[in-house]
Image (tube, rainbow, N blue to C red):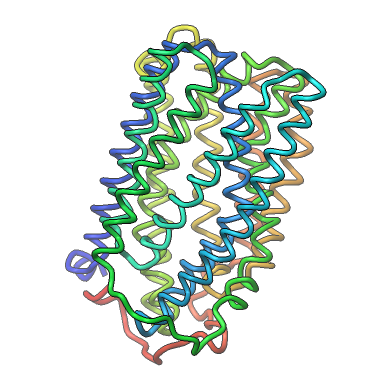
Length: 439
């Protein structure tokens, strides 16, 4: 199996996925180090809360459709079908995102009216949401088509420009959250324009075909993912809103900056593996190459588990040095939160890999049940632990609810079974072969 992998397309995918994640992580870590020198924890906390709303909009109102496009694109036999799929995904994403922006902006103006808070921040967050969705749509569909170089360069340029322009505006105009958000907006706008032009020039222009009702197929796949992404957001970002309610904005800033550092290290490495293995796994599964798909899945799971264990050990040994390197001194009080956060991130990545058979078989409703278990656990544990133990309680809630979620997902997905059958009506060809060099 490993000799076949050496000559397969997986190696090229892995290189570009690694490049994109490593370069963007380095840019974000360096940007965070400089930004935390220029703004206080309270201002960083405001930006983190607004970025959380943007992440919620992307996750709930757009990513389910993008995820559907990534899963269905290996089944497209022609460039015309791919164009039709992209049009369906883009149309549904645009409609849902417009609704999300309207809700965010109107909610922001209402909040500002009753609390004298700046409604401009929510308006900027709405613009940032629209541009971020456009970025994610381009990057994720490129990943689904196994165009890893385009996806990695797009992501890297955005990750470099965002902190660079935010730092420049804060340096020139002052340490206000408005300038940070505006810097993010200008950076993503510039990056999106450049790579959309590149994508259109390098793409094959074919008329769309209507041999399949992609819009309905995307909607059916995405519908159970909408509440699931809301659950995902609650598990990943909901804790900072509980902290903001029970503690202070400065505590949110300390927690968010520390979590961002840990999550970057673990999530970026897990994302390299996901972008490398998921498209190949879906492609093999759609072609009924079930043994090949099974081999890819377990190589993926083993890689995630090994990477998580090694990363956790390294963080335990170097957490003080990491905090001194990437965070300003005023943020170092949260260094003891890192091990618990790291364990939670590792369990989250493992659960995502274990759940892949459910996505491959388009059993998104079953996947929703597993995510719901994690969300219920999070809803019970986060307020309880924060109220009793403060920021340390919020950190230790992470491995608790992500661990329960991973266990439930493994039971539901049964990744140890090699004879999972694809859903009817989604197969292009009928082949059964081992892991080969054309992966």
